[in-house]
Amino acid sequence: MTIDQTQNEIIEEFEFFDEWIEKYEHIISFSKDLEPMADDYKTEDNLVKGCQSRVWLDAELIDDKLIFKADSDAVITRGLVALMVRVLSGHRPAEIAAVDLFFIEKIGLKEHLSPNRSNGLLSMIKKMKLYALAYQAKLNEE
Image (cartoon, rainbow, N blue to C red; front, side):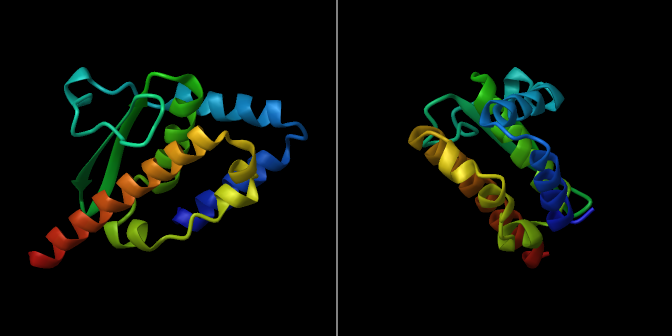
């Protein structure tokens, strides 16, 4: 499945909910699908700067695709990072670096997240795209 197909799937999922409390519950449900991150990965280097909650993010290149691991100490934030992992993990670095994450606006996240959570989400995206750019550069060297 492409990144855009996943984004469209998420947009369709969120269309089922009328109230934002239901959408928040759906975001929280994503946190349950996120594989627990081993404590070895919960390092200062993997901490996402700019998040009010503690969020750890790591990436590994497997068969030319980035696989993200993530965790957070806050349930909504864990759901948000799980959502981002769902969208971006398993794709080539160049795809991730260039992607337009249109689903964020389409599902209303932009206007319904608090400023702190919104900044945190942007910080997660930035870190994921930086991983993608770094691995893309590494692939181009080979």
